[in-house]
Length: 318
Ligand SMILES: [Zn+2]
Ligand SMILES: [Zn+2]
Image (cartoon, rainbow, N blue to C red; front, side):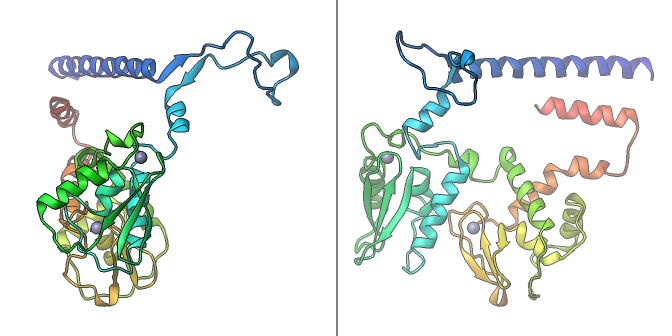
C-alpha cells in the first residue's frame, strides 16, 4: 500500500470514529429520557414473584421504562407505530368496502384518520362513518357523501371533528403520526420495501399471466440482480408497484389496501390518490438509484483505490 492511500485511510478511519462516537452520545441522551430510577414508597408491600426464591423476593428492578408506562396508561396510543397506522387504515378500507366513497386526498381519508388515532367502528344506515379512538374511547361521525363539499368544509371537519373529537387528555389530540417521514417513500424508509419484496419473493406463488408488463426489460434485469431473484417477472413487477398477491387472481396494495383482479389488470392506476405507491415507477427508480453503488461493484471487487474512493464519497454525503 503506498503512502498516499495509507494517509487517506487514516482520515477515513478518524471520520468513522467521530461518527460512531456521536451516535453513542445520542443513545446516552435517549436512554436518560427513556428510563427513570424507581422510587419505592415506604412501607409498600411488593408483589410476590413466584419465579424467585424467598430470599430474593425483595429484589426489584431499579429503573422504570417510561415508554412501557406510557403505553400501559394510554392503551392504543402508539403514535410512532407504522404497523398500527396501516392496520387502522386497512380497517377503514375493509369496513367501507360496501359504500361508494370519494375520499378527499388531503383532509378526510382512511390514512389521515388512521394517522390521527381513529379506527373504523361501523357505517350507519345513513352511510355515515363512525370512528372510535382506542385511547380515549370517544367516537366521531363523518359524513361520507355530504351534500355540500368544499375544501373549506373538509378542513373544518378535520379541525373541529377529527382533531377536537379526542378527549382533553388523549395523546392523539396534539399529535399526528408523521406520514411524510414514515409513510411516504423516502430514502430513510426504503428498507421497509426492500424487506417486504424480499420476503414476498421467497413465498411460493402461481399468478395467472396478464398481457401487461409495466417495467422495462432493463429495469427488470437490474431488479432481479438486486433481489438475487430468477423467477416470475410479473410477481416482481407487481411487488415493486406496491401490490401483494392475496389470492389466485387478486392483488392488494400494501399501503392503501385497494384490491385489483389480475384478469382485468391494465395500465390503470388502482392506487388511492394519497397512496405511498401512487407514482407507480417511483419505488423502482429509488431502489435502483439507492443500490446502484453496490450493484455496480457486485462481482467486481475493484482496486483498493476505487473502493477507498467510494467510501470517501459516501462519507462526504453523510
Ligand atoms: Zn383519543
Ligand atoms: Zn396503493
